[in-house]
Length: 243
Image 1 (tube, rainbow, N blue to C red):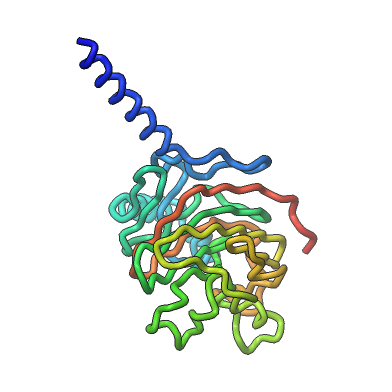
Image 2: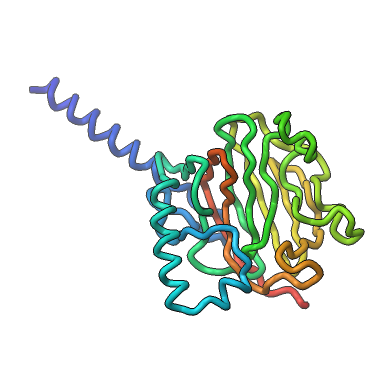
């Protein structure tokens, strides 16, 4: 009987440890957790979409589309042991509410070589995430590393400096990377694994070149034909910067 009791006790302890492992880390002081470590509560599905076009869509049609996107999200995004995983297909993982100026923290991992992903800010592409050793993407500059504002036009003197990161700070494929994104007004800073890769540079509006960014919009994790893993998603909203 004592042996059975010890075995039961060990099983209970193991279950508690597994449950604890599936809960997200505590947010840093001043930050709010966007992911509870267990499911996708507070998130929705959304493809790459011009925020102006979405806002102009009639409410009933937006509701229908959102239901469709959420079904797609459930098919291609899942949560296991505190990690959000995508299978390389489907809509983008999108915050359920919009944000203006903020600090956003996340861990991301490329589970296989040649993954291409990114973080959309206010629904606008993007802080680039990719494999610096991918031969397919060398022609696009992947060897420079992740964290740059990839959709900034190379021909624009104002935006070009942030198109690629200041330094390559990526960890090898399969390892976790830690990223901090700060957005104030039109400008973005990115710290990857403790190194500043974008330093307070303007981000271009991909959908409407030359126009200001939206004042608010969702944060999205891009899907681009390959799996991506994320965890420990935290945000701290900031007072709006003068425009």
